[in-house]
Length: 468
Image (tube, rainbow, N blue to C red; front, side, top):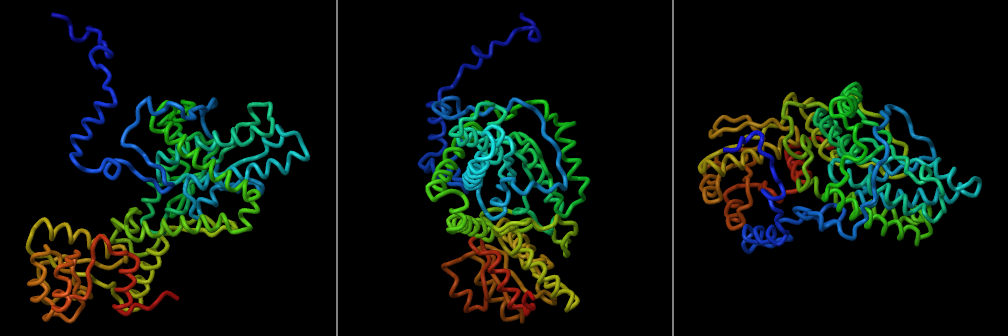
């Protein structure tokens, strides 16, 4: 009998390759009649279609020439970029998604390079150009974005006839953004910058700034030390190289960003596109899409529009100074922060926070799920939350019935006549809406509700003073 410890493994023989057709056949069986595109293909904010898996065959014909030849990055803290630095990060803070950030930034870089080559050789001029990119929360997209930036810059400067490889190489400074940070739930901000810093390093930044946003500055510095000294991310030149997914994503982002670059060039260059309003219109459209996704909770900001810390009633301290930019600066959490601050001011004026009673009854699964949904929903406003099956003697300002659709009408008919405060229903029982309103229900809270609009409405109903 062979010794299992010393027996050699033959991976090619013992684990023969499975063709893509077999994978697709298995997927089709699991999906049954469900639509493959809707179920398994992710449509990103940039409009990219991301497949559920990638194989080597998906790299055929793609631009996969990105490879870093150096290792490591420089930690930068509290140093303002040079005045002539290409600030792609300000595009990000103004709402740009990854493709827009790249396309507009490369156009700005090319315009700057063209202006300074009149006074010095192209190679020397190109070495003076630096870029700052913000690295957001979409982990793999941000890795691919930085890799795509180098590919795009290589292609864009080819027309200048550069002779030295060092001149062509993009000088790339990455920083963690403010757009997805909040003055509440400060340690979630620390988690956010951790994944963002990882994306920046794996994506191949030359310099990295981790901005403390509500947490101590030494934590921002220690994070980079951990990435370098414990994770050893400075030991590999291109950690993402060879990943089918990252390679395809890099190519897809680069191709779409190149289209934007060409549109800007056709408009006369970056400054003319900016002056004409072309860039601001594109950014405004993207900002509106971000806001809608956050307000409807299609996109989660942990601690802001979902899973709030109910004990945190006041915002954190210690925020970085404002950015100097002609572009609008946009943080996704601001509408929710205004709601929570309005609640806190009301509490200071009245001596108590508004209280929501989650009144549960009936179907165990449904009452639990709907109570938890409402706890997260109204917790985002800084309200106090209580849960009970008893409403007699409550000091709540709102009651939300949490049960199953079939039980709601009798539940409402019992509770509404006996209380003098508004009663809402957790759910969207369309067939019973008219009857529930007749019974005294004043509103409904469900997955299709706009959180900012709904919370503001109930703050108004409860008589909270409007924001000064």
